[in-house]
Image 1 (cartoon, one colour):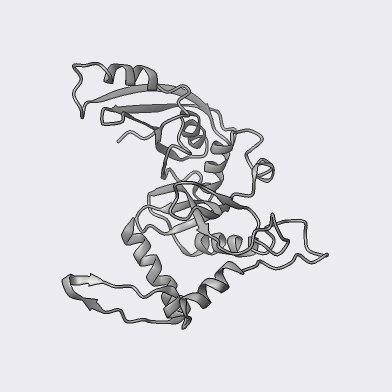
Image 2: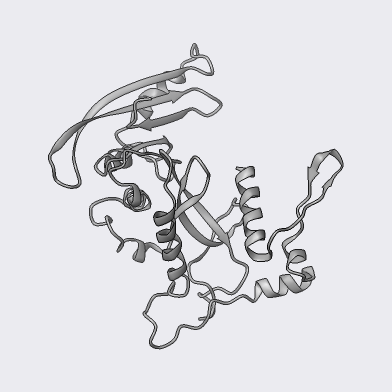
Length: 275
């Protein structure tokens, strides 16, 4: 993860300021210049600018969309990636926060819309995105904005699926029917999500925490909690289910596996892939 951030940092610097030379000091430590230094600003000047950033006041003839100023950029980013980059065999879905230290639209019209606070995050205040990334390169290929419950519930697939299921389906839409493997953390993972993705020709693997309906979590964790079960022990569960394809071409039998692992905190992973 650190290497991904480091590479992305370099790409941002090159895009904004061209090639930069970095110096190696003792012990082989690579020192990165501060962003305000690259921009030729003092820290106080850079800080003053950042906290006064605005999106721009919406004109009267603009659509009644609070994200109208940034939506074209997001859509162009997604389309350009799909047209010019072929993803590998595995896709990872995740959450991401873009830090925002400027004005908030809840307090003034020119502020950024959708600013949220997430305690415990490295950047706790900002705009939340959901992303789909190529596991081979670590590049983000598809982005969706968190626009709030009301607007999120009006998006495609929400009429048939829960929020997490519909979100995962939308993020992976460019690769439907490609038999790619999708990985997700506990925000996305559930048996229902894994089953839903098979209807769109995708496999899913993810760690189950709270969304444990239809999973063997209770049985598995009960067995792992026994005094004679050693740390590092794993339990394997297997079942089959019938699913109807999204294109309506009939029903098919699919396989679902679950692996429970005893650790400091027990873990349960479900998957529609047979490794």
